[in-house]
Length: 77
Image 1: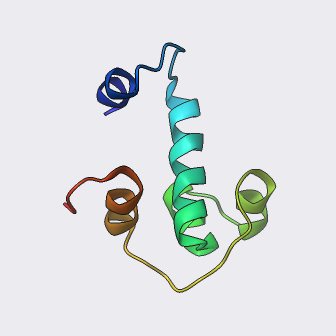
Image 2 (image 1 turned 90 degrees about the vertical axis):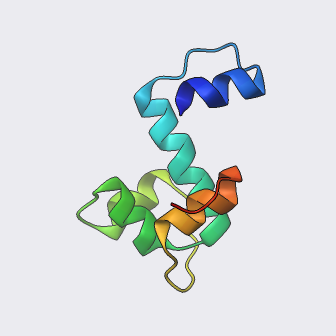
């Protein structure tokens, strides 16, 4: 997926797994404002750990695959 996104966006910088993880988590957080979803996705043990690095929004829980689809324009799996 990283290679396809890099190719389609003509992004020239190196996309490391950590950078990709941070970008996806931030995009999902910005789209859903669901702290618990992002915390779960990242495997963080506490919300404070997630808040330290990501958006502080909250809303109702949404399915992670739906959020990824909305953010990146994929069909839901």
